[in-house]
Image (cartoon, rainbow, N blue to C red; front, side):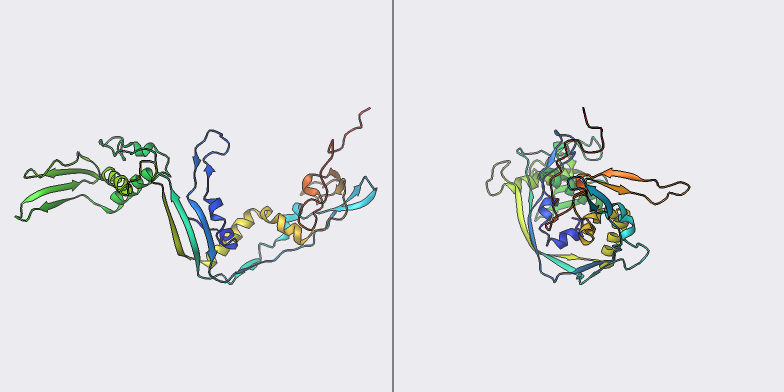
Amino acid sequence: MPITLGDIVYAFESLPDRFGPASLDPDDPNALVHPGFVLAASGITEDAFTMYVRVNLNALPYKGVDLTTNYVASVNSTASQIHEVFDFSDPDWIRVEGLSKDLTISEMTVRVLEDDAFVPGGDAREPLPTGNSPAWDLPPWLFERLIAEMARRRTVEGIGPHCDEYKLGTDVVAFEACVDATGWTEMTTFTDVGNPPPPAYLWDLLSEVAQVRLHDGGLAEGDADVEFTLTDIVIPLDQAAIVKQIKTNLERNPEALIGITEQLNDNADGDADFYYFKPAPAAGGEGGDYLFFVTEADLRKDGDGLPARPYEYERPGFSPTPS
């Protein structure tokens, strides 16, 4: 399970949101919705860490006019100059101090949902490589599908072709189970000790056993959702790798820091309705002069970082007054 620096900042309380319910296709209202698997998480037992970022806050505001009062006002210009705010050539433009080699999640509750019906294992080799169990048609987050997939991986990666014999006290072979290179399993009984299950992939047999054992306590099918709480989960951290990845991500997208940078460099003053902008001359051409009507993002912020006034223009922009 991937852990981000943001998860650490919020003491892992962000995990239920990041790994909670989510549509597989947000643009499709009929898409399957993953129910999520982290119900709750909290607690870092280690001391806090500190992140330092070097910024250049020399951006000058854009001068504009408040048409209500006819006074000169200033619009914060940090967002348009965000690529000049950070000196990415400086290896220490961002650094983290006090981050432990290991962090510990005090408690995390995980849930896996069960299908409403018993899901039989397959009884045919086709379709390759999984066989024909209906488990493979289930959403990948359900218990039956997870068990089938884990058993298949364990078989493919760790169990080679072999045969096992089981003998009676008289040293007579009573039962033999053989697994081939594909995981196909055949069981044979001798001396009338009973009828073995028909040939199947090993994971089909294991998934049926797991489903039966899940209901040992008498729970009905569909009522045996798995939920458990883990405590004191140790997370090893590579501080150098974390800082390197943070640098890479922010260098690709410095706009992610616009919000915090604007708070550090809030050079807005008054409530301009439009402002003057003269871009730096482009290579081989001239920059020109422009008047921009303010957008919602240009509104001055109050002490809580919220717009200091509503954006209530009936016709934003420059247009002739209707007669």
